[in-house]
Structures are given as structure tokens and as C-alpha cells.
Amino acid sequence: MFAKEIYMSRRERLMKKIDNGLILLLGNSEASSNYPANTYKFRQDSSFLYFFGLNEPDLAAVLDPQSGDQILFGNNVDMDDIIWMGPQPTIAEKGAQIGITHTEPFAALADCLKRAQEQGRKIHFLPPYRNHNKILLHTMLGLPVASLKEQASVELIKAIVDLRIVKEQCELEEIHKACDIGYAMHFTAMKLAKLGMVEQELAGVMEGIAHSQGAMTSFPTILSQNGETLHNHSHHQILTEGRLIVIDAGAENNMNYCSDFTRTIPSSGKFTQQQKEIYNIVAAANNLAQGMARPGLTYKDVHLASCKVLAKGLKELGLMKGDVDEAVAAGAHALFMPHGLGHNMGLDVHDMEDLGQIYVGYDDTYRPSTQFGLASLRMGKMLHAGHVLTVEPGCYFIPALIDQWKAEGTNKDFINFDALDAYRTFGGIRLEDDIVITETGCRMLGSKRLPITPEDVEKEMQG
Ligand code: GLY
Ligand code: MN
Image (cartoon, rainbow, N blue to C red; front, side):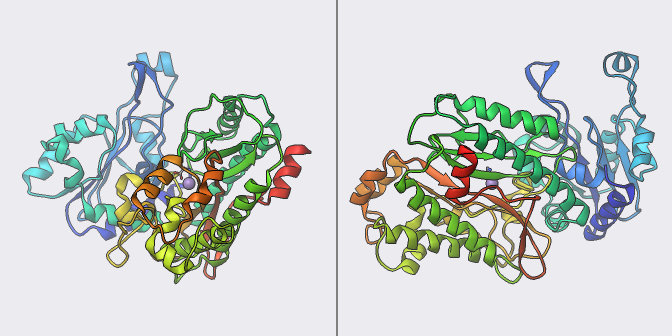
């Protein structure tokens, strides 16, 4: 945990942003896997962690901006809990750790909310994403489960996004640690990969590093020779000659801050000429974005500039044609990169995605696009110092998508469809680093950059 003053200050700043009503913040409960007592590894809600730092299940809190009252709800353990889980701090002791003096048993939460409703006070809550909390909100507030997302408080969402999106120095230090774990995961895989191995051997070693050095992985590891499937979670292919392995993985450190890196490595330790050509274009798109990202630009500006590097490179290879600016404006490059340049990262790998991407990556001035490809850009708004983002351009050859566009004639003025026949089994390449926006530009997070040039990747794989 951070010092309690950090959590106290965050809650004070949150309460200042809400004009009236009560703020309700729910922690997470244990989630069962295959029978009730066999649970997944516990993951606390990230907003609850941000304001309260308590990494245990079955807690909730109410903040009253009018009176200044802050109440932490949770139960003291009984003898059965002590026998199975060991002694635990009391709820009053937990409150004291984070500067809260008013604590109540969990059952008192429903009464507290009922009283507020009877007084006609608004109750601000966040959109729930776990069924347990949906049922809890339904039971306590009397709202239909299906309506909870739309009844969630936009005022509270915007207030929390405002706070969490700009990382404090103490948070950057934690993200730095998560990045170093991510580095160890990827560097180890790079060293270990050999023809004949099964993908899951690499994925398992990487996930073991995440678990042994931090809390866990920041999302299920993507590791596949079929990297053209953007989020490929199947790991049972044998590494065979001439393939590319897309590895997209990251860690949560012990404070639950995240990292997220992607490297693409040749199965044999040596890129083919065709692979190296595409790889260098994607690396150039990544480098351009990192050289450009700074306050005063939107991340959509950076995304589009990066896409132009991709389109220009593909044109030089004869895969695209026509004017590069016009091609990118038309979204033609999205045949090869149907996703966005990156997303915010922090206590979630896709930071605050539970609150709604429209509030995290966009605002009243900068609205999302509906164009294929650009619509998948999770962060499009103005950059400010303290934003932590991923930079992850890619280039993929997705046979089903190529066939569809060719049959429809989609963007036929910008794509040389016949030239794509030689790339049908190519797979994909994605290269991802993590950055923080500074006052004048951006800085990469983590102690070292993972090998990025084809030469350095080959050197590590063969060395
Ligand atoms: N690293 C997975 C993603 O950004 O979606
Ligand atoms: Mn990512």
C-alpha cells in the first residue's frame, strides 16, 4: 500500500468533484471457478484500490461530500475464518490504515443507502462488471440489473477518470516495476524459443515470471504463430520453421499496476527477408509515435501519423498504392492494422475500461470515429503530462478480411490485392512499448527497452 495520506488526498479530491449525493464504491468479492470454494486469484476493483488501497474481498465504502463522512463497510473475521485463513485485521484496523475512522459491518451498507434514498439523495455508483456486484446493487438500490449500466453516474465516472488518468509519481514508480517484470517475461521467451517447442511452454514460463515477481499477468497471455488473430489465446502449436510468433503479454506488480508489451520473434531465430521488410515498417511506426507523442497533440493525431508510416512502407513494397494521406483518410491501411495505436494503462491494462472507453479515451471535444480500424482506437483525446499509454502498431495479413475486401472492392484504389497472395500465411507483427507523456514529449517506461530491431532480436535469440 501507499502511505495513507495518498488515499486520503485522492478521496478528498474526488469528493470536491461531486456536487450532491453519496458516492458508493464497491470492492470485489471472490469469484468461483468450478465450485464455490475454488476461486480464481482474487483481483480487487481498480477504483476501489485507487481510493482505498485495501486488497481484500467484500469491502465497500460510502463517501458523503456534503458532510465529509467517509464510511468503510466490511466484516470482522470469525473463528472459522481464522482457522482457515489465519488472523486478519479488524475492519476498524483496516480503516485506520487508510485514514478512515468510521467503519461499519457490511450489512449496514443497505440501511445506509436506504436512508439516503428516503432523504431523496442521489447515489452515485460506477457501472458494475461483476455479477456479484450487479446483484448487490439490484438488491440494495432496487434497480433492475439490466438498467445498472445506464443508471451509473456519469458525473462520478468523469470525476474518477480525471483523477486516475494522470499518474502520480508513486504510480509511475509502480508501473516502472511492472514494466521490468514484463521485460523479464519477454526477454526470457526470446532466449528460450526454439523450433519444436510448443507455444504453451513459452507462455507458461512467461506467466511464471509474472507470478513469481509480481501479483500476476495483467491479462491472459497472447502468444501465437497465428498472430493475425489479434487476441489469440490458444497456445498449442509446435514452433515450426519460417513462422512469426506474436507475444503480447504483461505483468501486474504487487501493487496491481500493469505493463503490456508485444514483441514478434521468428520461430527459428532468424527473420526471412519478407518478414524483415514488414517488421521494419512496424518498428518505424512505433518509433515515429514515440518521437511524436507530447502534450498538445491528440493520440488520434499520433495514431494517424503512425498509420501513414505503415501505409507508406506497404506502398513501397507494392502492397498499397495511391496517395498515402488519402489512403489513410479512407481507412485503407486498416486492412493491415484494424486496431488502434494504443490505450491508457495503469491499475488496469486497459485503464478504466470498465468505466466506459467513451469517457476514458474521448471527451466532449474529441469523439470516437465509426470508421473501420479507427473505431478501435481506445484513446483519441488530447495528451497531457502524466498519461500512461501503450504504443502498439501492427501489420497483419488476415486472409478472411483480405478476401472480403477484395470481393467487395473495398478501398480497391489503395490496395494491390493480387500482391497479397504471397502473404496469405505470413501471420502478423505487433510491436508494443509503454510510455508516459511528459511536459515536452514522452518517455519509455521500464529500465530497458526490449530488443526492437530485427538484428537485436536475432542476436538475443541466437546468442
Ligand atoms: N495487450 C492486449 C491489448 O492491448 O489489447
Ligand atoms: Mn496493449
